[in-house]
Image (cartoon, rainbow, N blue to C red; front, side):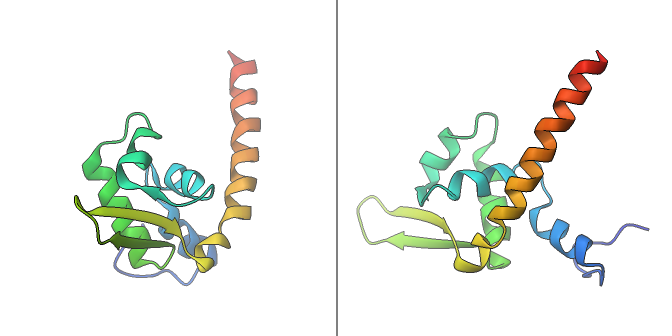
Length: 112
């Protein structure tokens, strides 16, 4: 039985996956691991993501305490996103996932 987003599983793996679950969240975090970005910069750095999906994922990541949203007092308004100190603890996990993904893609390409 799948665990809904509203109820948190007691399984640590499910708890972690509920935070980074989503087509683009890993990519968003990977881009932000290099430093703060404006919304438009982040969107341009991720081909294929829609603005709506980017904003949705950023809101969820901010709600989970992984990302920090800072609105600068400028005209026009400027919003920058960065990874929180807590969110930075995910970077080593993302690096391991990335390494595993590269190996998996190599395996799939050999099978073709």
